[in-house]
Image (cartoon, rainbow, N blue to C red; front, side):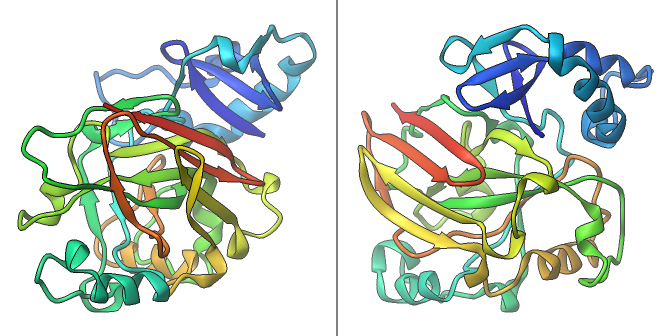
Length: 283
């Protein structure tokens, strides 16, 4: 199924242009005794929620996607993980383009590992991203994101796919400059996720998820996950060697070639035959 959050934490299942409201499936969640759990409780209980949602589909209220406000399909990731320079063609362009490397040496993922983005930067489909006042240049970076479904540490690549709850489209928005990467990539709205969390049964093959990005209708990026330097299982292995992965954690798998700047008024759309369409507005 393709789960979505909409209209302030309601739960939906996306079917074409419709959203089926299955919010009652959240009754499967355990009572939360603290304000914030360590992991995302909905993703941790996704199996039970899926069973209840499936039973509700036949009678669920059907809404038009255009009439609802989508939110990021994961509400409380303990970590949003980024994979820097994880496509060979992007490595080449980053080394050649002064605007991208800003005079610094470009380090591919095998040299420096991954990085973290602030949870406060997370937004969903349809969001408006306000460019930071002091940013000379902000770039789009289209990606496929993996959502972790159960806790694990020191996960082997061979076992990694057993820990995946689903997939989503993502935008890793980035300020170009001399600041630390965590500052340049953690501005409000700079972690875009959506439109849904597509469970693994919705994906023909996670090793070759195709996606593209356009700005104002002009295609700038197009790739698929078969071209990653570090594959999805290898990313899970790499990250879990350093810290526990928890339900709801988001791994943005890296952006391909074609990275470029956005300006106020731009409309950025990321699309995928299997993962749908994710749109943001730049202000």
